[in-house]
Picture (cartoon, one colour):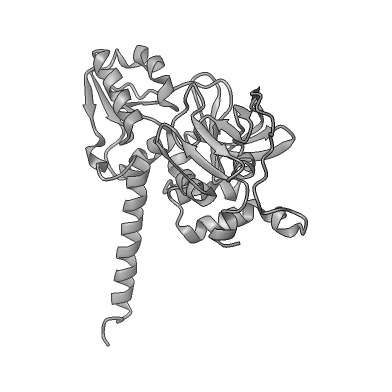
Length: 314
């Protein structure tokens, strides 16, 4: 299917396939905790099943299914994203009776709360056994040798279906879970504190940014600072007890409103913060910057290979 045909598929089905369930349903509207922002307390992301459109009230933006997919997978170009979505809806394409138009699921105007299915972790394995997980990390610019000391292969279950993802453990034993189609976490949700006996600490929002920092400084001197991974800016308050004991707190936060508010909270708490986001000032976060660097390096290598092959001697 092309983009036009993909946009006819129900957005609610797409969200369900990647493990995102509504918080409640009311008439033609299904309300979600926004999947394109950091977790929130009250759902403010709506899908209108009658017209098959989504709208995020905090961002004041919305659109069709493909627009949402681009937000969820910002590092994928259009052709790769079309391929990914086609793979996700493979069985719908094979079924001659499946409908490509959005159908309202709930006709009642009575609000009904829906309990999101709990993630059950079935097995934990060392990173490097599952090529799909390794490939996903590499697609985010993270080499296996960088990720291996900090990540695991997590095999988990959502209702009756089995899945796997790259897992990053928090201090309470829960896992942040990431794969090409899913961004979520197993319970309990918490921050991650990595100690290297440093007097300074680096703070990032998610573990992809943490691994991106390690990748960017791979060939530099040994790590001397500690790290704190929030795993969600909603957990900022929990990090204060950890951060108060450090001389310097280097902030590698996202360039968005949530990142700004988190920085303000740290400053109000009296922490000696240093805004280190200037190194990626033109990008949303550390991983976006890393991906841009990788892309630039590939282009340079391509040009060097072209020159060596006498491609310019026309």
